Length: 266
Ligand code: BTN
Image 1: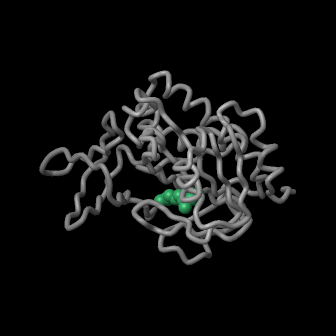
Image 2: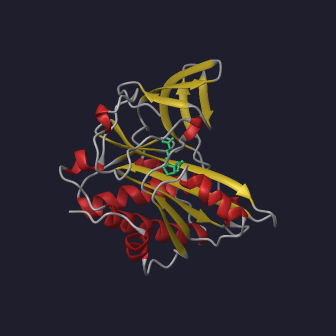
């Protein structure tokens, strides 16, 4: 049985994770990304984590809403303040390292294999389980920072929520409810390890490419005023998706990508 989340539970679950400088629990807030961006602009240190039990204005990529009932999910954001050299990495590098960390945490602590769909979806059995929203900005002193928000459906059944894409949860995938505080720790520990590797100059891009469910599949990419179909053949060094279309190789940096033999939406 999971303990309710609280400031104390969240702090205890992240205690000793070297990268974490401050853990903030919010029973209800607009969006943990918005809270953390405000704190970052006021000088919050790298490694600040903001977690909410409920969001009233949760956001996803492409300005979509992120909806989850109170007490059901992991909804949190992490602040990175990369050094100038680490700022040379594509912002997608942070999406990559966090999605790989979630994948590893779920596999290693719950024994379930989840997939990653380009660029920011976490999927299980062709259904969306979670997503990552990476936002970069600059504070008043000109320091660049990165806020990564992670939303993971944990102990609820989003398949009945009326989303216009198939959705699932960790509970559905594992077969039983999961203690969110334990999963939070497992994820943040792995983010810390992977961020240390990024800071040491090791890009996660090739590992991420091999983890992507999208590669080798027929895809349809919706761009403003244009639709590209072809086979996703890989990603480039920045994480852009390379799609072999009939009329040549296309480099996709944003847009809706649908795997044509699956109904998973962005
Ligand atoms: C997506 O699938 O497009 C990304 C979803 C990201 C949702 C998380 S929940 C915590 C953080 N706060 C937000 O408002 N969004 C992210």
